[in-house]
Length: 640
Image (cartoon, rainbow, N blue to C red):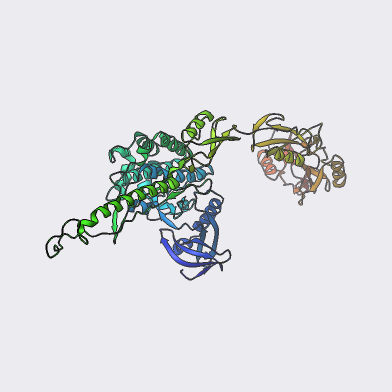
């Protein structure tokens, strides 16, 4: 694909990665002149029409999931045999790369990565999506420190070698929830379980379940609890053990309902940890690695705040020291007798000057270092996490960090009135001491009064609801003796009630006074139609005529039937008669009376028997055999 142009727009420049369902390339959008990632489905999958349809449907849905920690989907298209997605390009690495390089992470780094992941999943869960394949490979860490989750919505339609079954269970084996394995059941809690496993892996440097074969790992998911991380990394706080135990509980009812609840728990646990707890270096972490002539120490640590609402990380901080060889202790002493101390040109004279210079250099370095520290770190602090706190509690925490406070209010459907809804800057952001942090306190859900809509025309009523911050809901119709057609009779909830902004309001709209369908059966077609129109009804004539007792050309039946109630303008269908159906009367004279009755009934007639003398033989009938008579008419028999 490298060098090709997709859809006449996307120039494929380089291959990034290959997976079970697609290959990802770096490409240039030649129309907008921007770099992006293009995911091209494997030809074997692109040949499956149902798979492609699901792929496109999911892509359209996920494209509407706008969140700063979700890899954006820009476009979807087909170019010959290639079905592709154009997505946001995130230069950097994956969490798997970080774990491979670093082993275990400090708790602060692990939580700094987990929080934006949960924020992304929370947005997806509230929008009705389940990721199903959360794993470190799908957590991208950009060069600018932003954390993003990839492959939203696509895993539902994919069955690759990373899945745990042949068609119903999707997801990498190490991160599958027990209910996925047993029943293929999927809800937001399967993503919560995977995040619990990822947190364990970040804290310990290893997966909680391991085995030579996938079956061994699946068995452990079903029958063994995830052990506390502190069993592998002694000294980890119990709050982190509790987070892992809750998120990765085998019983899904014991887990948080979705990523939003888990994110709240993570932030609450972080608030209880000290800096020493958060910055403890686990023994499994890779402390240093020699690269050429440099010593590099790579750590994952918080970075300065970026765009509001976006979680950022500084992926690596590289400390370099020049390589130096060992001191040379094999040099020969100088020839000749030793010079007297203090003699010109002798080493003994230089020592006092070197010592003084070293002292001055140390003082200078210390002063410069202190100044650099103050400029870069000493005058800064971090905004504490105060979400869900009362105003007094939040002010106290901010004051403890030498920060001023401004207060605003905003509506919220999820946060109780009076508690902190959000802060600006966000919790964890780097901020200069003495600066101000804006607390946005929840006013609770915004309540809107339903406007007076009685007798208002339907279109005008819908506009009034929208102007009030509400949505027009289901509209039903009912008869009204008082209101003309199209006017609002009532609403549910009722006028004047207060409900949350954005909710739908049902309306009952008048059909006008009921009109009873007149009985026009047997009337001439034109007369019947005129009578119905005078009642305010519309008329339609059925294309086919029918046999009936009514005369030909008159109305045989109406739909709805006479007496039914309709609204003004409703339709009545007339079925026109072509007269009674005439049948030939069988000749039953000289037949046994029972046989005669049966023959006439089978032919479509009813029978009346007159017994004149004792006997059972028909000697006369009326009408006579061979005559025509209407279907269902009565044939009289005389028996003797």
